[in-house]
Image 1 (spheres, rainbow, N blue to C red):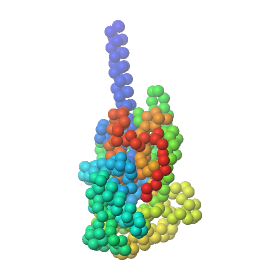
Image 2: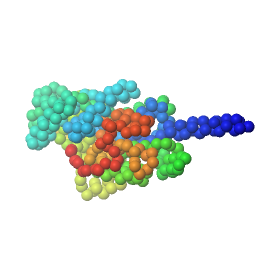
Image 3: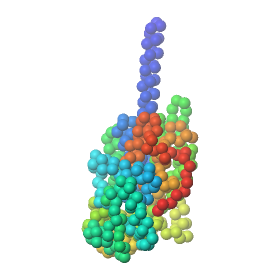
Image 4: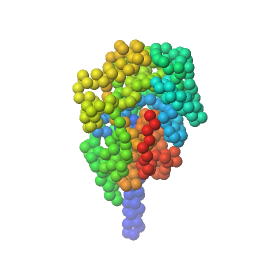
Length: 402
């Protein structure tokens, strides 16, 4: 009898151990933008049982409203942050080939109006070279050879960054999620996180699509700092800003690479669509302040949306005359997550058990590497030294570099 009881206890302990191991593998990712999608993919690749949820759908907020410029530019300061962007830009080549994500790596050309700012750009490019970037200053004739359809105005030189690329962030996000699903991940939307319930035995994400048990909860919620405050119990000071993104209907080939011109960013995707981003953000008028107070992703009506889109197209037409024929396909107001110091926020909250925060500006550039490194930290349950500067409990100092 004693042997039988002992056998039953051993079986129960084994079942309990297997159950505990299963719980250890469960991860719920909140936010199906490109960063959340990358974390989900890398966790699924590593064998984690992972579910990703989004209140609307893949790349429906910050990831949709981004210019989607992959780069390690002069603005990525200091050197540790620049190095992070360099590594992720290189990793984009590997992951885009593996998942068939179309990325246009044709470099970028950049210049400014003011002579003083141009001279500063020369110094910044010299620093880029010291940091391992093959950036250089081109004279006007070289720039015109690179981009024969562009009028460079009165500038005498431009900065060239040949490693830069551009991608469709919505397509990239969906590709990452498709790959994650093929590896066993679950994707749920529309599904909104409502609260969490934790105990010594079990943690649940209470959502609009049911209770989801987890061992680790990842908050990849972009500019939604209220979610981080309520769930992770951490205040991330952000200077979140709106950015207007205009996408044209497909046009004939006009641009080889990315154009970072005074007042506007421009690139042409492989499908012929042209993407424009306003360099200084939305106009700082009283009417705009009232309109943006609730952080909308769209304009109140189509007429107003087209007016603002045309305003940006008109700026672009100064540099690419053929843009005068552009037809508007989409206009979107993107709210960019931007911690005060401009750096990512990555790591576990010290105020909420097993809650991992993953919020960053430059999300398109950094998504592949962040996904890989965050997944490693979660899998191995130990910090990665590459992310030591970006923890949620650091002191946030306001820094504006661009």
